[in-house]
Length: 97
Image 1 (cartoon, rainbow, N blue to C red):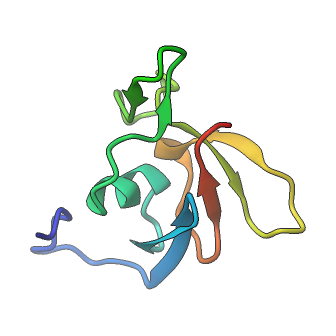
Image 2: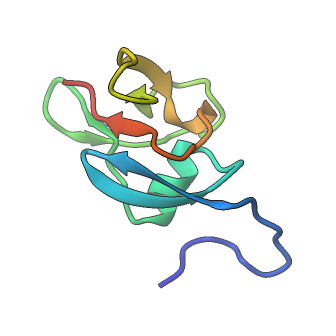
């Protein structure tokens, strides 16, 4: 089942990034959060009580979608809000350890 709105939508080029080493298909200009949700991923991290957490506000206010990213193995991991981070080819995304 396609979870993206497709009718009347113009998309950028396809790209693939990884989430927890699993390939995620996205489109240039789409956020990491949107791509993860469109691929059925609802939990982006766990809270202190080990409950799954995902996007809440989807506009960068609440920090519920915080993940770690790095562009390549030569780069350091950094914390970002998935709802504000563009999906790009080769991006590595993981939950906060």
